[in-house]
Image 1: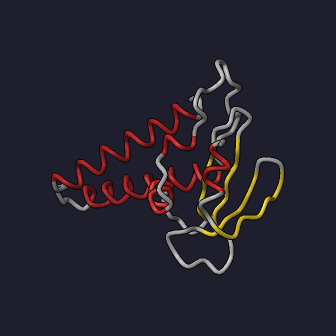
Image 2: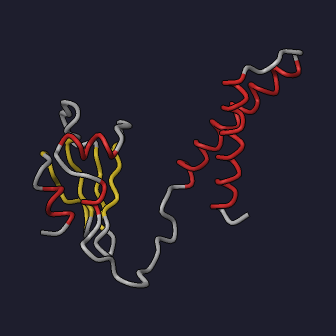
Length: 139
């Protein structure tokens, strides 16, 4: 059984939207219509997205699967990588949020306030995420 077959057999409201693409009702809530999407890549890997924001880990746990179940037994050597695995708008939303964290910290410091230890840690995490985003974008 392929990863897609295994996943699709455990969720409801499945409808195929194209070759290797389906929508389904997210099992962690009472969906009246499908709000989750599934995409099967050429090498058999699965990409899952919930438009309601539920994590893939929680969706899989609800149907008795794990992240490893999203991959075929043996990935093809030298499989073609995804050219754009994420939508630019999703990446920009994440970058914009981290920029807000940096701006809030800057405003506090400009007002003469000292950042708490937790705020400094969060600021460093924002910097790491922004750096990772620029590296991922090839800058």
